[in-house]
Image 1 (cartoon, rainbow, N blue to C red):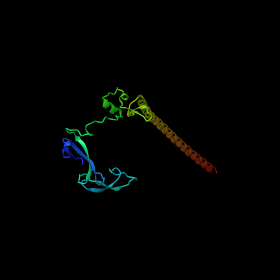
Image 2 (cartoon, rainbow, N blue to C red):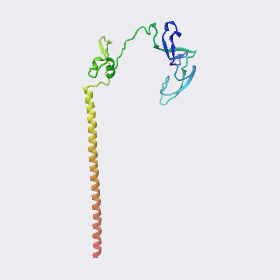
Image 3 (cartoon, rainbow, N blue to C red):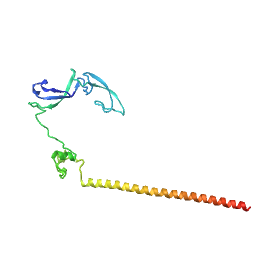
Image 4 (cartoon, one colour):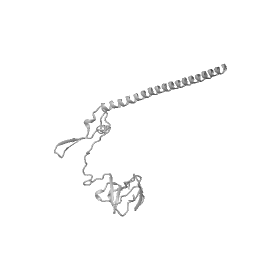
Length: 214
């Protein structure tokens, strides 16, 4: 796989073409897999993210049969990608060019496609298509432009920024009020302790004077 071959090896009509092997299947339908350096079939322990395997449960692993990336004699289907065109055209493949059915959705990609500036209105250059619905009405279908900067988007951005600033100021005010309250509570606590100590001292003094009179 991923090796380029000369098209003349496949026939005279492919002379001048260069193909790249992108994959294939064997006679039983098992696909080739890149990185398995053998021309036979092997059983790999697959998990989530591996090709040719879809886990049914979380954390599930399973052994799956795959074909190695080396082309062998029992490969029945070989997938090729044209990397270089030849002099002749291949009927049904290179003799016609299919128009692009869907256009870009992102605003910057539309600008780069039509070479627009920041001042141009992107909404006028959206690639849309007209079709007839099942009810027989002519309808126009266009993609919704993504990342389009409009006055409403800027307004929401300013609102988010103002809310963040207000939150910072509000947190500072609340922190200052809490600090002031803590200092007030500590002062009240010290004052209460001071008054308690003075009451104890006065009661002891009065008790001592009463004992001396007796």
